[in-house]
Amino acid sequence: MPVNIPATLPAVDLLRNENIFVMDSDRASHQEIRPLKIVILNLMPIKITTETDLIRLLSNTPLQIELDLLQMDSHECKNTPVEHMMTFYKNFDEIRKCNYDGMIITGAPVEHLPFEDVDYWNELTEIFDWAKKHVTSTFFICWAAQAGLYYHYGIPKYMLNKKMFGVFEHHIHNPQNPIFRGFDDVFYVPHSRHTEVRSEDILKVPELTILSESPESGVYMVMARNGREFFVTGHSEYSPLTLDGEYKRDLAKGLPIDLPLNYYQDNNPDLSPQVRWRSHANLLITNWLNYFVYQETPYDLSQIE
View 1 (tube, rainbow, N blue to C red):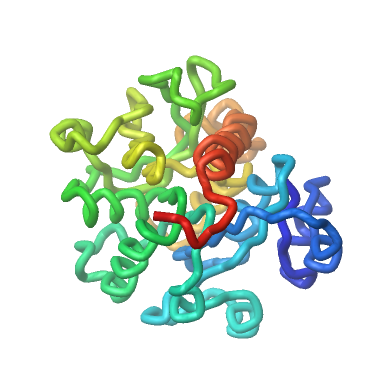
View 2 (view 1 turned 90 degrees about the vertical axis):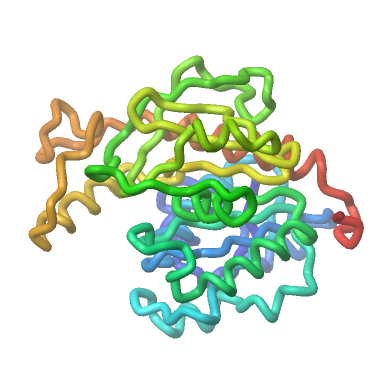
Protein backbone atom coordinates (compact mmCIF):
# COMPACT_ATOMS: atom_id res chain seq x y z
CA MET A 1 0.00 0.00 0.00
CA PRO A 2 1.78 3.16 -1.09
CA VAL A 3 1.73 5.64 1.77
CA ASN A 4 1.10 9.26 0.89
CA ILE A 5 3.56 11.18 3.06
CA PRO A 6 5.45 14.46 2.68
CA ALA A 7 8.43 14.09 0.37
CA THR A 8 10.75 15.62 3.00
CA LEU A 9 9.83 13.22 5.83
CA PRO A 10 13.07 11.40 6.81
CA ALA A 11 11.36 8.01 6.46
CA VAL A 12 11.04 8.50 2.68
CA ASP A 13 14.75 8.21 1.89
CA LEU A 14 15.37 5.62 4.61
CA LEU A 15 12.68 3.29 3.26
CA ARG A 16 13.52 3.81 -0.40
CA ASN A 17 17.04 2.66 0.44
CA GLU A 18 15.42 -0.54 1.81
CA ASN A 19 13.49 -1.01 -1.46
CA ILE A 20 10.20 -0.12 0.27
CA PHE A 21 7.69 1.67 -1.95
CA VAL A 22 6.52 5.02 -0.58
CA MET A 23 4.55 7.63 -2.46
CA ASP A 24 5.03 11.32 -1.90
CA SER A 25 2.10 13.73 -1.97
CA ASP A 26 2.93 15.00 -5.48
CA ARG A 27 2.46 11.60 -7.10
CA ALA A 28 -0.53 10.70 -4.91
CA SER A 29 -2.44 13.77 -6.09
CA HIS A 30 -2.64 12.25 -9.59
CA GLN A 31 -4.39 9.04 -8.46
CA GLU A 32 -8.17 9.43 -8.55
CA ILE A 33 -9.04 7.15 -5.62
CA ARG A 34 -9.99 7.73 -2.01
CA PRO A 35 -6.98 6.78 0.07
CA LEU A 36 -7.40 5.21 3.48
CA LYS A 37 -6.91 7.89 6.11
CA ILE A 38 -4.66 6.64 8.92
CA VAL A 39 -3.46 8.62 11.92
CA ILE A 40 -0.50 7.57 14.08
CA LEU A 41 -0.39 8.89 17.64
CA ASN A 42 3.34 8.63 18.28
CA LEU A 43 4.13 8.49 22.00
CA MET A 44 7.70 7.22 21.62
CA PRO A 45 10.53 9.64 22.45
CA ILE A 46 12.54 9.14 19.24
CA LYS A 47 9.75 9.90 16.80
CA ILE A 48 11.60 9.42 13.52
CA THR A 49 12.57 5.81 14.29
CA THR A 50 9.00 4.87 15.21
CA GLU A 51 7.55 6.66 12.16
CA THR A 52 9.91 4.75 9.90
CA ASP A 53 9.15 1.37 11.51
CA LEU A 54 5.39 1.82 11.11
CA ILE A 55 5.50 3.32 7.62
CA ARG A 56 7.66 0.37 6.55
CA LEU A 57 4.73 -1.95 7.37
CA LEU A 58 1.98 0.34 6.09
CA SER A 59 3.72 0.57 2.73
CA ASN A 60 3.44 -3.11 1.90
CA THR A 61 -0.17 -3.53 0.69
CA PRO A 62 -1.85 -2.41 -2.55
CA LEU A 63 -4.05 0.57 -1.63
CA GLN A 64 -3.03 4.15 -1.06
CA ILE A 65 -2.80 5.53 2.49
CA GLU A 66 -2.97 9.15 3.53
CA LEU A 67 -1.06 9.45 6.79
CA ASP A 68 -1.29 12.00 9.59
CA LEU A 69 1.14 12.10 12.51
CA LEU A 70 -0.24 13.19 15.88
CA GLN A 71 1.54 14.48 18.98
CA MET A 72 0.44 15.25 22.53
CA ASP A 73 0.01 18.93 23.38
CA SER A 74 0.42 18.22 27.08
CA HIS A 75 3.89 16.69 26.77
CA GLU A 76 7.12 18.27 25.57
CA CYS A 77 9.09 16.07 23.18
CA LYS A 78 12.80 16.32 24.05
CA ASN A 79 14.32 13.66 21.79
CA THR A 80 13.15 14.78 18.34
CA PRO A 81 14.03 18.12 16.72
CA VAL A 82 11.42 20.83 17.18
CA GLU A 83 11.57 21.56 13.46
CA HIS A 84 10.55 17.97 12.69
CA MET A 85 7.60 18.13 15.05
CA MET A 86 6.43 21.49 13.70
CA THR A 87 6.75 20.36 10.09
CA PHE A 88 5.19 16.91 10.20
CA TYR A 89 3.00 16.61 13.32
CA LYS A 90 -0.47 17.81 14.15
CA ASN A 91 -2.01 18.36 17.55
CA PHE A 92 -5.36 17.00 18.67
CA ASP A 93 -7.25 20.27 18.16
CA GLU A 94 -6.32 20.14 14.46
CA ILE A 95 -7.94 16.73 13.93
CA ARG A 96 -10.68 16.46 16.56
CA LYS A 97 -13.39 17.15 13.96
CA CYS A 98 -11.89 14.68 11.48
CA ASN A 99 -12.71 11.01 10.95
CA TYR A 100 -10.17 8.31 10.10
CA ASP A 101 -10.31 4.82 8.68
CA GLY A 102 -7.64 3.60 11.07
CA MET A 103 -5.51 4.73 13.98
CA ILE A 104 -2.27 3.37 15.48
CA ILE A 105 -1.25 4.38 19.01
CA THR A 106 2.33 3.53 19.91
CA GLY A 107 3.93 2.47 23.14
CA ALA A 108 5.69 4.86 25.52
CA PRO A 109 8.49 4.49 28.11
CA VAL A 110 6.25 5.40 31.06
CA GLU A 111 5.16 1.97 32.26
CA HIS A 112 6.78 2.42 35.70
CA LEU A 113 4.17 5.11 36.45
CA PRO A 114 0.54 4.59 37.43
CA PHE A 115 -1.53 5.51 34.39
CA GLU A 116 -3.04 8.59 36.06
CA ASP A 117 0.46 9.93 36.86
CA VAL A 118 1.51 10.13 33.21
CA ASP A 119 1.63 13.85 32.40
CA TYR A 120 -0.52 13.53 29.28
CA TRP A 121 -3.04 11.01 30.67
CA ASN A 122 -6.03 13.35 30.54
CA GLU A 123 -5.35 14.31 26.94
CA LEU A 124 -4.71 10.69 25.99
CA THR A 125 -7.99 9.47 27.44
CA GLU A 126 -9.79 12.24 25.58
CA ILE A 127 -8.24 10.86 22.38
CA PHE A 128 -9.27 7.32 23.40
CA ASP A 129 -12.89 8.49 23.73
CA TRP A 130 -12.71 10.46 20.47
CA ALA A 131 -11.36 7.42 18.58
CA LYS A 132 -14.39 5.31 19.49
CA LYS A 133 -16.60 7.67 17.46
CA HIS A 134 -14.18 8.95 14.82
CA VAL A 135 -12.08 5.91 13.82
CA THR A 136 -13.15 2.64 12.19
CA SER A 137 -10.43 0.53 13.85
CA THR A 138 -7.72 1.45 16.39
CA PHE A 139 -4.50 -0.54 16.86
CA PHE A 140 -2.91 -0.09 20.31
CA ILE A 141 0.74 -1.12 20.76
CA CYS A 142 2.58 -2.16 23.97
CA TRP A 143 2.03 0.48 26.71
CA ALA A 144 -0.83 2.00 24.70
CA ALA A 145 -2.47 -1.45 24.67
CA GLN A 146 -2.18 -1.62 28.46
CA ALA A 147 -3.47 1.94 28.80
CA GLY A 148 -6.43 1.29 26.50
CA LEU A 149 -7.36 -1.92 28.28
CA TYR A 150 -7.18 -0.13 31.62
CA TYR A 151 -9.15 2.95 30.59
CA HIS A 152 -11.87 1.24 28.56
CA TYR A 153 -12.21 -2.06 30.43
CA GLY A 154 -10.56 -1.69 33.85
CA ILE A 155 -7.74 -4.19 33.16
CA PRO A 156 -4.78 -3.56 35.52
CA LYS A 157 -1.12 -3.84 34.63
CA TYR A 158 1.46 -5.59 36.79
CA MET A 159 5.17 -4.95 37.22
CA LEU A 160 7.41 -7.82 36.14
CA ASN A 161 10.32 -9.05 38.24
CA LYS A 162 12.57 -8.32 35.29
CA LYS A 163 12.14 -6.88 31.82
CA MET A 164 10.36 -9.01 29.20
CA PHE A 165 13.03 -8.64 26.56
CA GLY A 166 13.58 -10.65 23.43
CA VAL A 167 11.77 -12.49 20.63
CA PHE A 168 9.15 -15.01 21.73
CA GLU A 169 7.06 -17.80 20.24
CA HIS A 170 3.32 -17.11 20.02
CA HIS A 171 0.24 -19.25 19.43
CA ILE A 172 -3.17 -18.42 17.96
CA HIS A 173 -6.38 -19.12 19.89
CA ASN A 174 -8.78 -18.43 17.03
CA PRO A 175 -7.21 -19.20 13.62
CA GLN A 176 -10.51 -18.31 11.90
CA ASN A 177 -10.17 -14.66 12.85
CA PRO A 178 -9.17 -12.70 9.71
CA ILE A 179 -6.37 -10.91 11.58
CA PHE A 180 -4.48 -14.24 11.40
CA ARG A 181 -5.26 -15.10 7.80
CA GLY A 182 -2.10 -16.61 6.30
CA PHE A 183 -0.32 -16.95 9.66
CA ASP A 184 1.64 -20.04 10.62
CA ASP A 185 0.61 -22.03 13.71
CA VAL A 186 3.59 -20.53 15.55
CA PHE A 187 4.90 -17.02 14.95
CA TYR A 188 7.44 -14.74 16.63
CA VAL A 189 7.19 -11.24 18.07
CA PRO A 190 9.71 -8.97 19.82
CA HIS A 191 8.81 -7.73 23.32
CA SER A 192 10.45 -5.01 25.37
CA ARG A 193 8.50 -4.09 28.51
CA HIS A 194 8.56 -4.06 32.32
CA THR A 195 4.83 -4.66 32.85
CA GLU A 196 2.13 -7.10 31.76
CA VAL A 197 -1.61 -7.66 31.61
CA ARG A 198 -2.92 -11.04 32.71
CA SER A 199 -5.34 -13.38 31.02
CA GLU A 200 -7.33 -14.04 34.21
CA ASP A 201 -8.33 -10.36 34.35
CA ILE A 202 -9.18 -10.16 30.66
CA LEU A 203 -11.30 -13.31 30.72
CA LYS A 204 -13.59 -11.67 33.29
CA VAL A 205 -14.60 -9.01 30.75
CA PRO A 206 -17.08 -10.39 28.18
CA GLU A 207 -16.36 -7.57 25.71
CA LEU A 208 -12.75 -8.74 25.35
CA THR A 209 -11.38 -11.72 23.40
CA ILE A 210 -7.82 -13.00 23.79
CA LEU A 211 -6.65 -13.89 20.28
CA SER A 212 -3.04 -14.87 20.89
CA GLU A 213 -0.67 -15.66 23.76
CA SER A 214 2.90 -16.78 24.34
CA PRO A 215 4.05 -19.38 26.88
CA GLU A 216 6.92 -17.04 27.81
CA SER A 217 5.63 -13.50 27.29
CA GLY A 218 1.93 -13.97 28.10
CA VAL A 219 -1.02 -12.21 26.49
CA TYR A 220 -0.14 -10.84 23.06
CA MET A 221 -3.33 -9.76 21.30
CA VAL A 222 -6.80 -8.83 22.59
CA MET A 223 -9.73 -7.76 20.42
CA ALA A 224 -12.80 -5.70 21.33
CA ARG A 225 -15.87 -4.31 19.54
CA ASN A 226 -15.63 -6.86 16.69
CA GLY A 227 -12.26 -5.54 15.61
CA ARG A 228 -12.85 -1.84 16.20
CA GLU A 229 -10.05 -2.16 18.79
CA PHE A 230 -6.92 -4.34 18.85
CA PHE A 231 -4.61 -4.34 21.86
CA VAL A 232 -1.16 -5.74 21.02
CA THR A 233 1.47 -6.07 23.76
CA GLY A 234 4.48 -6.78 21.54
CA HIS A 235 6.45 -4.86 18.95
CA SER A 236 5.98 -6.53 15.58
CA GLU A 237 6.96 -3.21 14.00
CA TYR A 238 10.52 -3.32 15.39
CA SER A 239 13.35 -3.20 12.89
CA PRO A 240 16.03 -5.94 13.05
CA LEU A 241 18.38 -3.80 15.18
CA THR A 242 15.93 -2.19 17.62
CA LEU A 243 16.44 -4.68 20.46
CA ASP A 244 20.19 -4.53 19.85
CA GLY A 245 20.11 -0.76 20.24
CA GLU A 246 18.06 -0.96 23.44
CA TYR A 247 20.38 -3.59 24.93
CA LYS A 248 23.58 -1.66 24.17
CA ARG A 249 21.99 1.62 25.33
CA ASP A 250 21.14 0.18 28.74
CA LEU A 251 24.56 -1.46 29.05
CA ALA A 252 26.22 1.89 28.37
CA LYS A 253 24.08 3.52 31.07
CA GLY A 254 25.00 0.83 33.58
CA LEU A 255 21.37 -0.28 33.90
CA PRO A 256 20.50 -3.88 34.78
CA ILE A 257 19.65 -5.58 31.49
CA ASP A 258 19.78 -9.20 30.36
CA LEU A 259 20.69 -10.33 26.89
CA PRO A 260 17.53 -10.25 24.73
CA LEU A 261 16.24 -13.82 24.54
CA ASN A 262 16.08 -15.73 21.26
CA TYR A 263 17.51 -12.77 19.37
CA TYR A 264 21.25 -12.89 18.61
CA GLN A 265 22.72 -15.76 16.65
CA ASP A 266 24.14 -18.23 19.20
CA ASN A 267 23.14 -15.70 21.91
CA ASN A 268 26.25 -13.75 20.99
CA PRO A 269 25.75 -9.95 20.89
CA ASP A 270 28.75 -9.65 18.57
CA LEU A 271 26.78 -11.52 15.90
CA SER A 272 23.82 -10.24 13.88
CA PRO A 273 20.28 -10.76 15.16
CA GLN A 274 18.26 -13.62 13.74
CA VAL A 275 15.16 -11.94 12.31
CA ARG A 276 12.12 -14.23 12.64
CA TRP A 277 9.23 -11.79 12.92
CA ARG A 278 9.35 -9.64 9.77
CA SER A 279 7.00 -11.67 7.53
CA HIS A 280 4.34 -11.98 10.23
CA ALA A 281 4.66 -8.29 11.07
CA ASN A 282 3.85 -7.40 7.47
CA LEU A 283 0.98 -9.88 7.38
CA LEU A 284 -0.44 -8.56 10.66
CA ILE A 285 -0.67 -4.98 9.44
CA THR A 286 -1.88 -6.05 6.00
CA ASN A 287 -4.69 -8.12 7.53
CA TRP A 288 -5.67 -5.33 9.91
CA LEU A 289 -5.79 -2.79 7.09
CA ASN A 290 -7.70 -5.08 4.74
CA TYR A 291 -10.22 -6.89 6.94
CA PHE A 292 -10.80 -4.41 9.77
CA VAL A 293 -10.17 -1.06 8.09
CA TYR A 294 -10.71 -1.20 4.31
CA GLN A 295 -13.51 -3.79 4.36
CA GLU A 296 -15.35 -2.15 7.26
CA THR A 297 -14.93 1.57 6.85
CA PRO A 298 -17.64 3.62 5.08
CA TYR A 299 -16.69 5.38 1.85
CA ASP A 300 -18.06 8.56 3.42
CA LEU A 301 -16.06 8.91 6.64
CA SER A 302 -18.72 11.13 8.16
CA GLN A 303 -20.82 7.96 8.53
CA ILE A 304 -18.48 6.36 11.10
CA GLU A 305 -20.48 5.53 14.22
